[in-house]
Image (tube, rainbow, N blue to C red; front, side, top):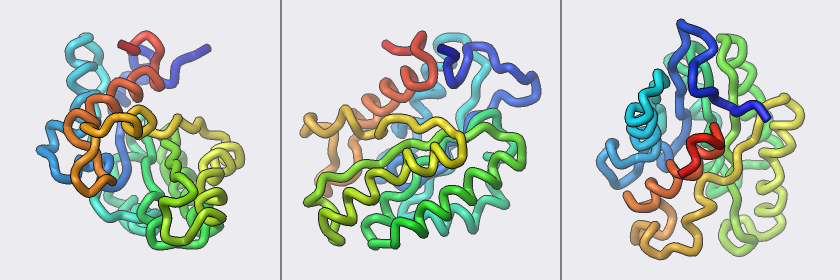
Length: 198
């Protein structure tokens, strides 16, 4: 199986990987150097790889916010843009079809610039969202629906290894600690290329 990112960039002029997201990507409450995009970059440098990571996470962003700032994003000029967005939409109970439509537009704009795109799935327990369990179940399926419709890969939820780890969460119970970001980076590297799995 071909890795999402090979060890050698396939295009000499595109070594950039953009992480486009919200507070999870931004590293809310932490030094930006502790956020997972910086840790991924550190791993690439240690391996002598030419890839470069750009953190375009903004705390509080929803899918419509990302659409509004795509004109200034480096994503369309990247080799790969990893889109981690939607959680804040869910907290605000934005209708799921609207989230799906926004994600589809984001993907198309990025691809129009020449970037490949991968979606980072979000997942919530039935009890977690204010809008209730039916909304949570509809939301949890949207990434696979959008990925299938747009023909882009869907990565497993970035927070999957954090749920059983109490030390991986800040006191708000929503955002990862520095230790949590280490787990995210570890998992994500393996998702991008199995050879990078530690």
